[in-house]
Image 1 (cartoon, rainbow, N blue to C red):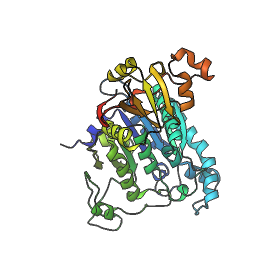
Image 2 (image 1 turned 180 degrees about the vertical axis):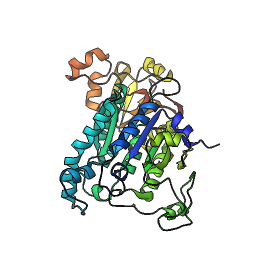
Image 3 (image 1 turned 90 degrees about the horizontal axis):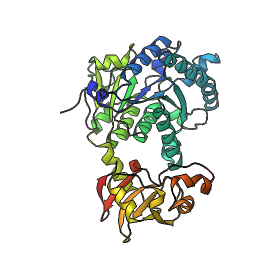
Image 4 (image 1 turned 60 degrees about the vertical axis):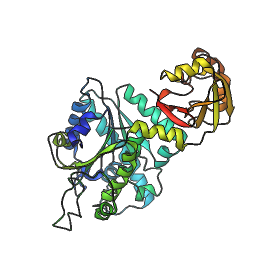
Length: 389
């Protein structure tokens, strides 16, 4: 039985919320809707707590830098060239960050600005750095506010959109739900601006050719997404175990409205995020090296613990931080695979040592783990044996 939008949000331990420029600036893009931003902040503050009393991990993907830059620099509504749009984003990002800071500060919520490009979610080293930064911010109780780094983007600033950026962030952070606040109530059977027979679709469990045919283009110059981009976002998150909701973000308190039954379109994921990540680590990535363990370390892994350098006898191969490596037992058999927290040269230097010796060996304080349990999968005969952690 499918979950309602309210249940998707309520059950999400990690929730990514995306708001677009057309929501922040109104349909004509002439006035920034600060009162609406306040209403959204109140919604976010209310849902920060999980039902079990713990903090829900929340991330906000916010467009609006170029739109704010237009206003700050008195550029009007004319079409901008690439370098002009980049300059407008540079001017507008300061104002956007200030607005969010002031609004969330009323609730005692600290915010942090993160600017990403698609490369940051695809390049392995950048991916790990971005993921680690976001995890640390949320562990400290801060709300990451993410935007595309339009000041250095090239084609992305013309053809990209924050729907897909939000989807990539959702996958990177293993989110349970992605909420896209749109300028329409959800996904329609046809373009509602053109067809009077267009009907809102409550749920899309599978994206078919007919679904893609029904998707229109972006509604205006401020919104680069449109329904096609939202379908692409769904294609990114659904296989990774993350459900998605497209809902009307124009109303005040948009999340409260959804929780109270406002119309929307749900894209439920039938996959398990943990299983999808296990398959990716165990079967998709090609190992670049191997870590040979003693029996004590192997036993700790079977108990669901991380791999510590103290239990590593030998490092084989040349690999970088974030590369896939084999985990080998005392008899030379593969017992797991994981993503290395250290490059091979440094891994070899700290192998067999406890964490209190790392600074003296490496001249910096690195992670305690050689492979964190979240990035490790036990295998047997090349097949996944069990989930770690």
